[in-house]
Image 1: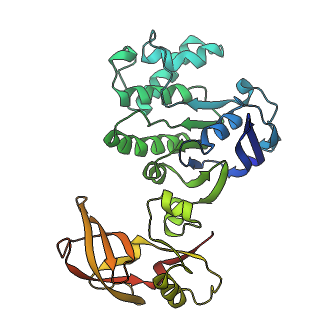
Image 2: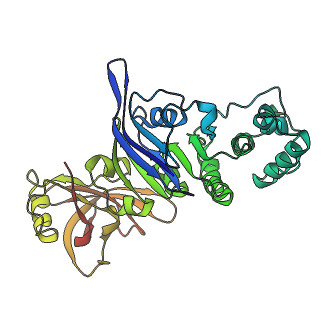
Length: 338
């Protein structure tokens, strides 16, 4: 449905995007994920037509839309601050785009009522925006974006102003509503947990480039670079040539990749005590940290050669400073691009 290729962009002397390519299939939710300043919002604005496209092409449904004005692209936009009109009630905010397009009042009323029900706000159309909670305002903003029946829905940090608990809940609701509407969507966020919950596909961005595109599960299981692994919260990254431990475990786990320079030991493949994989190595270690997370612990250990590892463990069988035995599954050792 959407194909962008070789998109580059410069702000002054700063290159904000470098030869970015991305595809969105019909009915697919694609998340642009990355730290602040990596180019996510710039790319979104270029796709929407809010920024000029100095280099590259944007194709939608087979047509080049690079020179198409914003209003003719028929894309829905939803922003972090929601941009709701404070002098209008919820229903009038939702109806705004439909009125601008000249829809009959009777059909507008029916559509607004239907949208309020679909986003979980049935009966609240006459409420002032200021009287709604943050989560309710977010739903009004979503309904307003959906009202004109956009060809593509674009969401820029839509949950960024909400607290963590509400974000987790609304991320799932957002995904379900978008899927129920049968829409394709591009969703910008810096939170990988949010991206996992919402996306069919995630594009991780770094300094204006797309580092990796994959499904949430594929991205978590096989990050391709040290940047991607660290951004997803994985820190067991080692220089094979600079660490005897890394060199030895790499030769055991990846004998067919003799030129490997960097490895990740995936935290899901490390356990205190009994090994969970048939092919694994055991090491003596000391427990250096432990943080209770409810149904698991985030732990840190140090091996005898001072190598430090961080991972999650379902139990805490020792106290900090005590000796433990750990098992590392060989299939948890992943070669990384430098």
